[in-house]
Amino acid sequence: MSFGSAKKSYHEKNSPVQAYIEGNFSRLHPAQQKLLDLTLQHPRYRMLGAPEVIQLCQNLIRSIGGKRVLDVGTFTGFSALGWALAIPDDGQVITMDINEEFSNLGKPLWKEANVNKKIEPRIGPALETLDNLLINEAGTFDFAFIDADKENYSNYYERIKRLLKPGGILAIDNTLWSGNVVDPIVKDEETEAIRALNSVVAQDRSVNVSFLNIADGLALVFKPSDANY
Ligand SMILES: C[S@@+](CC[C@H](N)C(=O)[O-])C[C@H]1O[C@@H](n2cnc3c(N)ncnc32)[C@H](O)[C@@H]1O
Image (cartoon, rainbow, N blue to C red):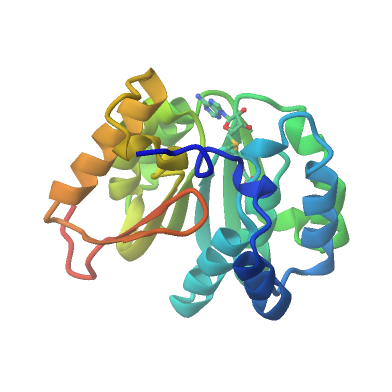
């Protein structure tokens, strides 16, 4: 089996199907489009979240009336901007990264979209930020997006389940990892970490799940409205 084409970066794919979907259904705010264009010039642009994943998650946030969002992995702030645009004025996005500089690209666009006051960057290892939030804010978040270091995906999952409100939604990005998760030859640490997380999610009967073959793979985890954890 060949995974050659699947291993191309999502942002380098340019199929007619993708062009059709983007051409007809993309609803990026002008500030999102600017940040997308700017980030694509960044040397590490491959880390950028896929626009249709961001749009899907924005729609989920709007549908559940989400106000408080956790964003694990800020990079240039493209995902954080999406969540901030989807929540009301009194909402809050806590976005986490170990690198403070990446988000300097996005901050002027957060301001341009007039959502900067809703976004709170927390610099440092996301695991520490989540542990600190667990002290007083368990069960208070409507939506979370995991998109940082793959080795910690299972740790993020376990913490975020408790930080979400009953009825809250968690989206986990890159769960296909360019197809590597189904390629038995690939055994690097990141691939193994994503496989381990996928296996935990697949077997976790305390949540509802959907695994989407969109962009680089997206696992959606729904905390039931009667959850008691
Ligand atoms: C894939 S990028 C995030 C992309 C962003 N969500 C978007 O939609 O454009 C991953 C980010 O996670 C950050 N990161 C890596 N390890 C981390 C850690 N232990 N704690 C917090 N952030 C981390 C990296 O610095 C990088 O900016």
